Length: 361
Ligand SMILES: NC(=O)c1ccc[n+]([C@@H]2O[C@H](COP(=O)([O-])OP(=O)(O)OC[C@H]3O[C@@H](n4cnc5c(N)ncnc54)[C@H](O)[C@@H]3O)[C@@H](O)[C@H]2O)c1
Image (tube, rainbow, N blue to C red; front, side):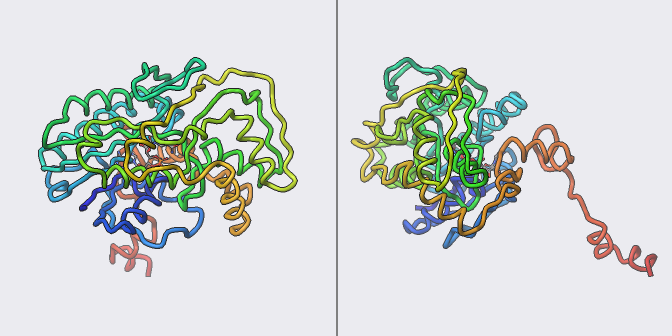
């Protein structure tokens, strides 16, 4: 299939490009590059050709000829969403719907959307299924709900949206995120030999390995159209609902010499368990092949190979909110999160402008 994958310079997308190529698809990547600097290690065998573009600047012609779009390019976490909720709605809701409308006009028949289990919000003790009531707690999660609503209304015989409600991802990716719970705890375990939590760790959180998300995406793309047409899938595994304290324990046991200190507060709003029966029974060939214990061992191996230190662990490129704030504060992106005019260095100016060179001589 000819696929346009957006967000291919992000945490999941950096791996997804290679995975889709290995499946024999013809892939083009697209990303505006907010987190390009967050490269932790060289971990991809092949990467697709790439367009450097904001999804809000795309035209219909850009989308001609594709069979499917896999759409990952959004502001990808709750704190970034709260930094400026308006811009989150502009990119994550309006931007995505405009992209889908253009895709439909351009004749792209499949649209795989990266939604999130955070649409369920705080739950009771039961496991949320795809038909459970939604209860989004943040601008980020609310946008996911709005996109699902509006894309559903666009589905017809020529256009098949599919909604992947992903659990929280974990595991190594060359473009690493340390603002995700497992990766963050593993980073602390390695750099400080201690996991110290303020919370008591009782909230439940569904988790999924980043490569199992990539697998779910290619299974959805390769599935017969009637199986995925206008369908919602929770992406994860019933055995991968964890209490945060159990995740911390698994990591503390994996990282040699790591001490675990649990706190006593329990004010984490995100607390939910999710049922993953549908994806494992209805999406052909899909099953999660990894778990947190494996992910923790993989992280330990990578940190040890690259000698991860505190500075690298805390680098802004690995934390979505820090990087967006840095780009705003240094004027590299404007308040609408568009890149500012080209910022030339003094050396560039000299090379580009012979008069400067003459003057200097
Ligand atoms: N990582 C998770 O745990 C998780 C869980 C559920 C859903 N998701 C969803 O999966 C997708 C990818 O997540 P991720 O963790 O790889 O995020 P990420 O932040 O690492 O990657 C997102 C990429 O999108 C790009 N982007 C953002 N706005 C853009 C725009 N306007 N135009 C072009 N590119 C833009 C960024 O530069 C970035 O490279 C997101 O939609 C996210 O909401 C992720």
